[in-house]
Amino acid sequence: LVRAGKELKSAQLEPRLATGAEVAELELTGGRLHYKLLTGTGPAEGWISTEIQGKTLATRVEAGDAKEGSVDPTTSDEYPDKSLWTIKPGDPVPPALPAPPRPAHLTKVQKLPPWSKPVPPKGETSEKLIAEVKKGDFYKIEFPFTIKMLMEKKWGAAWLTKAFHAAGTMPKDNSVQRIVKCKELPFSGYDAAGGAGMKGLITVEYAKPDANLHTDLFVKVPFNQDNNMTWRMNMSFFGDPDGGELSAYQFLQHMLPFRTPKMYFVDISRATTNYIIVTEQVPFMPKGSDCKAYEIIPTIGKYQDYELKDACQPIYAMWRALARQVAWDKQGRYESVRVIFEEHTYARGGGREKVVAEREAGKAAAKLMTSEQRSAWLKGELLKAVETATKKEKQFVRMIDQFCNFVSKWAKALFPGFTDAAFLDKFKKQMLMMNRLAPAIGLWISANEGHEELHGLMHPNPQIDNAYFWTDEEGMYHAGFLDWGGCGYYDYAGVFLNIVSTAQAQHYLEHEEKWVQCFVDECQRWGGPAFKTAELLRIVRLGYAATMAGACANCMVNVNSLSEESEWENVKDKQHEVVMDRWNIRCAVLDMEIKMPVWRDGPQLQVVLDWAKEMELPTDGL
Image (tube, rainbow, N blue to C red; front, side, top):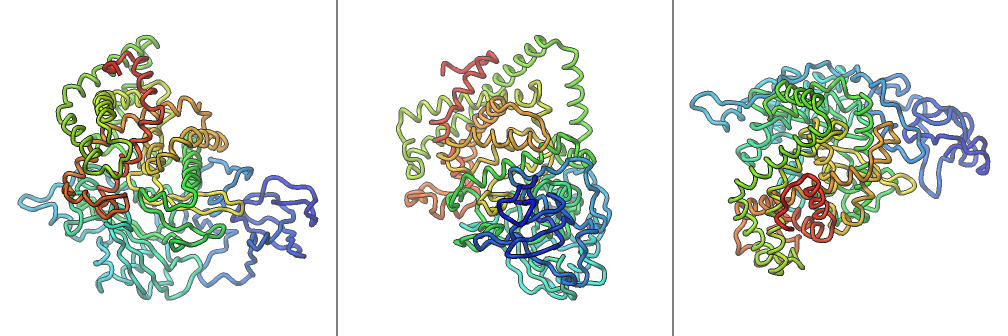
C-alpha cells in the first residue's frame, strides 16, 4: 500500500507497489520508507511501511552486496520476472504484448525434431534402445538419464558444469565443484513424487558463490526397465509429452504470468527418448510447518488435499493462474511458439500438418453451412458416436459389474453410502448411458460453435501436486506450476477438470461454480475473453460426466492388475498402504472415491440429460 505522505492517514496512491519491485531509498523514518521506483510496477514515488505486525514488507539490499557474477536487476534480462509471482487484487495487470524475447544469456537452440515412434533396430528390444547414451537434440552433448548415472564419476559435477555452460545458465568463469548430496525421491509409497518419471534432489557447490545460481536443484529423468517400463512406453513411445515438457522450459517459461522453477538444463535424445531436466529446487517448507507469508507451503501429494489447512483456497489460486495464461494466450502472447507446441500436442494424432489440415478443412466446411445445416450435421455425428459406442460396450458391461462389486464388497470402507444394491443397480444403468454418451460429449465440446475460444496453450495437468503455493501478507494464496509434461494445445474443459480432480467431494460440490466464476473474472481482468460463466460451467459439468464411465473402468483395470481381493479385507480407510502406497491404485480408486458423491449429489447427471434431449440423443429412459 503506497501513500502520498509519511502519515498513515495521507492519501492512498494507486496502484499498489507490486511484490518484487525494487526501489531507491529517499528517506527512512519510524518504519516508513520514502522511495523512488526502480523496477516493477507501482507509483513512481511514495511512502510505504517496511514492516507490519512483525511481517517484513521491504528489505534493504545495500549497494555492493551482490556477489561476483551476479547481474544488476535494473539492467539485466535475467529471468524469472519475480514481479509476476504475487499479483494481488487491485495490483496493476501487466500487458500481454509485446511478448518478451527469450533471455539473451540462454544459449540459442532450435526446436526439437518432430516426434516419431522409436523403432529398435532389427533383433533388438526397446529396453536396449533406451539404455544407449546419445547426444541430446538441443545442445548436442551426451547426458546421464538416471539419477544413479548422474552421480557416477563419468558425469557428476564435471558434467553439470559442461551442461550449464552449454545452456548458458551459468557464467563460463564458474563451475560446479561438487555434488554435496543427492536424494532419489520415491515413486511409490505415501510420499511418492509423482508417476511421470524418476526424480531426485541434489545440492551442489559452485567454485564462485553466485546469488543468481541455486545450490539446491531438482532432477527429473524417465522411467526405465528397472522401475516402470510400462509407463515409460506410454509416455515416450506413443506420443510426445516429454517433448512438451522440455520445450516449456526452453521456449515458454520466460513468457508465463506465474511462477515456475528456473531451468538450468534440459535435453532429450529423439533417437532413444531419454531425457534429463535440471531446474531449481522448489523451497517447500517441511511438513507441519506454520508458514509465514511468501514461504512455500509443504509439498502436497496427489489425492492428499486433506493435509491442507484450507484445501479450497489453493485451488482458487490455480484457477487464477491458468486464467492469466488463457488471457495472454488469447491476446497473442504465445504465437511465436505455436508451431512448437502444436507439434508436441498433435504427435499422437498423426503429426501437426495432418491435424491442422483436418481442423482447417473442418472450419472451411462449416463456413459453407447455414446454422441450421450445421446443427443438423452435428446432431447426426453425435448420434453416430453414440451408436458406435453402444456396439462396443460388451467389455464395459463387465467392468461396471466388477466396479459395483468392488464398491459394495472389496472396498466398502472407502465408499460408505454407496453399497446399497438398489443404488448400484441404478448407478450401473447411468454408467452404461454415460459410456455411450461420452464420445458424443467429447465431439460436441470440440466441434461446437465457439470452440476456438475454449481451446489454447495450457499446462495440461494442473493438479494440486503439480503446483506449489504461498500466501501474501493478507493470507491470499498464490500458485506456481511445475511438471509441464504434455504442455500444448488443449480444450479447456479437460484442463479445468484436472484442476479440481483431487478436490474433496464436499469442497467440489460447494465451490464448483465459484471456482469457474473465479476463472471468468480473472481472465477478463487480464484482458482475456469475457466468458459466460453459465456456458463454461455447463461444459465443465458435461466434461465431468463424460469421465465417469471411463473412470470406473480404469479403477478396475488397476485394482485387478495391482492387487488381490484378499488384500482389501484390512482396508479401513484411504491411508492404508494398498491404496496410498501403490501409485496407480491411489489415483484410480481415490478418483472414484471423490466422483461417487459428486455424481450422486451434484447436477452433472441432470445437465447430461438436458443436453442429450437438446441434441436428440437417447438416454434409455433415465
